[in-house]
Length: 85
Image (tube, rainbow, N blue to C red):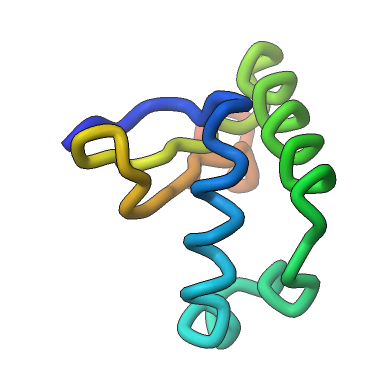
């Protein structure tokens, strides 16, 4: 397993994973109500995550097994000046 930041080349895999899992995600992830996004919107979202990462604001990770996306997680600055959740 490898945990790393998303790359633009992961958009299609992320799109498919979310489509396949949206019913499972919906009760816990408010953003799931907006799914499915267009692939171009998903690509823009990954670009936004990269900008947030570079500014130190948020850190979105993909979890990969043999280069196949199997999960994701993130760290966000929502709990105070020096905290991440």
